[in-house]
Image (tube, rainbow over all chains, first blue to last red):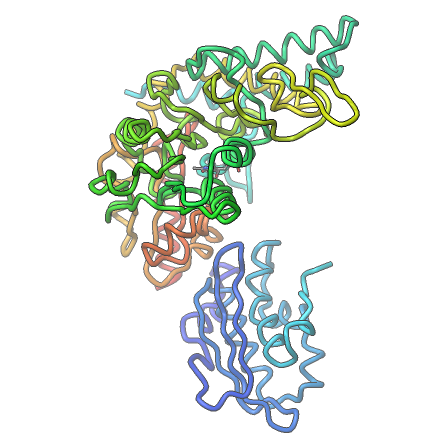
Length: 130
Length: 408
Ligand SMILES: Cc1ncc(COP(=O)(O)O)c(C=O)c1O
């Protein structure tokens, strides 16, 4: 099996969790990766500082779709404070595959959109800036 | 029978001898940038080891020699595209800068509110955005020649698109996505019949097709050395009378005749458009790239690419769900194949092919309006050049079959 496309990644990419629109969303944000045109939209329901539900839509490669699928599982039920601790490394560990410079952007787009949706765009500094 | 001795050609390209992930490199991304032959690499090396000096105004031997070689490369470029004079060849950074030069200098002087600029849906962003900026600044209208379902320009309505209001028509000689080679003669003669100038983006045309700017009657033509065996340098061709009448683009050293406190006068062509120290080594090595292409003959380059493309289009059909975009007629398309596959994103295709040391490109290839038109967010693209072989296409197809299996 190809290490980049191990079963787990393909499974999430082809059968993504939390895919779709959220009727009673309180927060939403959408962004694209200008390099490849991938697009992710996150819709979240935040009640008393807790993410009670989240769903995503968008087009993209297996890496960005799997990352969105896994991340939405991960953050559901977490508080906005806990979300702060989910960073680039958490996403890379979750995916557990070696990623080159350009694919890292695919992997991190969902996290960027989640943070922009939860805190506003100015708080969601690009994790890949350094 | 191939029109080129490809195995001998491959020997001239050091990078192709290399292994990636333990497999021989299969380079199918020449539309992005080509690889460089030994004589080009040597020209760069020799320049820095033996000749390096700043050009023009140096009295000593080295500076003289550098100037001579630099200007000799300009004359090779003139001959390569059959321009009338070497004064019509302006060095730039790349095709993008050459197109911007026309938009800024010719465009700002000649475009007024209510004028029309006509481009096409096939264009690369570098032949779209400079015209958008110009149109926005001047209150002009930007119009597009549409494409048909095969990704070739549709000229049925040309008379209504290029009108008496049209001042500039800027189109590509070959699409870097669909591969379409538009009938430039029709477009250029229509442009001239309404008094507009024709600007040709030859970034893909010049490396792959025989090119004669006088036969074409192009007013301006832009291309990039790096896509045609050379280093990172660009060329703008412009008809002399047009270039003479244009204001300068960038100001600085070399482009002036006299500088006074409040005003200056301009140097002769082409130096008027070449402010500051240019890419001297790159220009000289670009001359070496043209030597290489001339030795092969551009008609043979084209014939080789047509054979490869015919073979590629045939073999790619074997891959389930794969769909190639662009004209089916080989005579109307250049040496590339952009494609999509069901339920597998082009990025994933490219990443899987990389495992087999096959280099292709994935994305919108700087042609977002075209992708939007076909409702594609991205495509994968394999592109061919003088050093590619049918065997490499077999490897491409095998690797795509494998990708198809992984993403069942
Ligand atoms: C059709 C076309 N035009 C323009 C360009 C821009 O070339 P450069 O980036 O060298 O300026 C390209 C390069 O991809 C191209 O394919």
